[in-house]
Length: 387
Image (cartoon, rainbow, N blue to C red; front, top):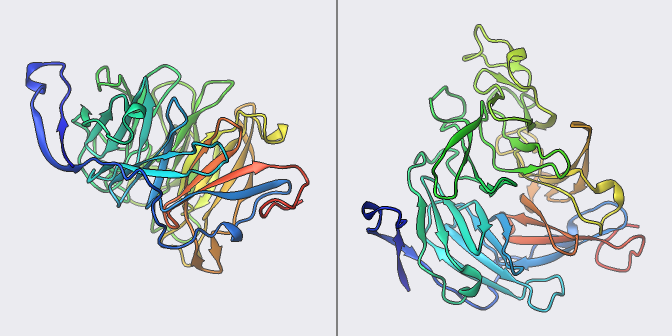
């Protein structure tokens, strides 16, 4: 079924419908996976097990929960948005629906007041009353239409903050450059009004979350390329108040840029709260707030490192735990590993999200899968847990 992209009805000039090649439909049946997910090869800490939550979610990227337990998943190159349902509550999605197709790199998904917001580079579109319409999705409405259209770092993670505002990153359209209006993090109303730059010098953030106690915004940032295998580090950053500058393109995790760093000092910019390794490509981050994991996981962050693309020996390709004490990162520890078999890529983790039962889901855009991690104590008879 071909659909039209509907502009917001705020003014008469915005009431026009844009005819676009956007297909919106629902399969209503599980999709077939191209290959089995590498779940059996993955490793988690003692007492945990990792299982397959869903397969065949092609190019699975960012995730967001709906109000009724639907898991919405974006994609990048595939251009699709998915709705996953676990109707019997057994910890595995029985149904994977495609609710939108033909969008431009719809990586980011965010849910608010019954509507699903989806990033599509220069636009953010909205699907109203979506959980009542999974088998017959509504026409998407253009909520925001004037974001930068550059493809390079133009895919956007989006999320609603505790203040009800929509947070949207604007990545640098390059490896390293000094272009006005880019390398920022924006905050705005759901319709794009009252837009505010809350952080500058952010090269390419594809994941952020708010600390459950302090309320500070923590975000990942991908470091620049072509300064060697081991430089500079990708970053975990903390924004305590709007207006901070995190260094790009002048300073990268304490290293002055050879082209743009002339006359600059890294001390003039906010230093990373944590260093996540060179070229590891950290993306999704979530603070664990549940009670199903051991108590020492609560309040710490789980971060998906998508993995390097041009390093001579691959790095990342895992999920790590960042221990955070009093606003400081005290340790970076492995949590989910096994996505590499030597230098062969088995999977690439993208996003992390906590489920209502306290388990954690991880998306994988290489294996087209969603994994579920839960804690079972020392019982090693379930899945591939390690006592």
